[in-house]
Length: 367
Image (cartoon, rainbow, N blue to C red; front, side):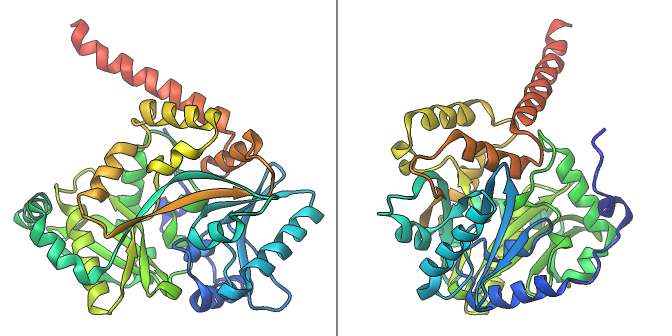
């Protein structure tokens, strides 16, 4: 049986935030433009501050790479200077830099740099929540899911994040959701333990049925874009069909009432035409992953789920490294950051789990 983090089983909350994390939060709330900006406040992320006190970089060190979560958080006009200063800091540690889930601002900055290379990794959907009621009106399948949840007496309530962090019901739902995953929980920029991070500016919506929590949604602010990232959507196995859509519908209407004009649900990996521009070896790896890894990470299903909600646009997301060609070493470091273990071991665990599942599927036929 997979061992779950202690806080999931005990309900223990993290200690008071260190001063550095509070300082990082202030900068995120002042300059955060990337959808991932608030994620640098999640557990396990290290922080580098520029000497001028007006910029912070959230990163993780793996195998001689400093992996930046998104991009430096700073004023737009300072982005080039801050990136250069951080890369100099990395060089003093004998490390290269890889910007993980870089969006358009950083892509534009390094587009013609001979010292940087870029690979496409997917896209993220973007909505203007003011248009959400029209989307619901147009999408019959979406309305059907909302009606299913309503008919099952699912209701949504906005919840205080600090209360959610200490509520065993949220820990139970998250543990149940993690248990359904094909592999151990990922970390870094898909951290499931969001409620252990900074809670001051996050929003939490809870889905309950018969006074029992069955699913929840956590949204994190993207201050410089006047919007939010729907960072986590966790549901227990007892959640009725439509519970996820009802959570999203409630959150979208809340964002619209607050006059937000930007909402994203985050990266859909291995999605979009820009993948064709990647090196041949990487295209082959991505093709294999999309074809055979769906039991662990449902690439197609995730893309279809978000596409049915009719996003206004899709924004391309990349990895950018300060090397002439994107290397297998950089990709390995990113994989280690997300998996928390050796990527080779993660693939082996996945293969074993897949083989065991196939054997279980064959047993009824043999009978």
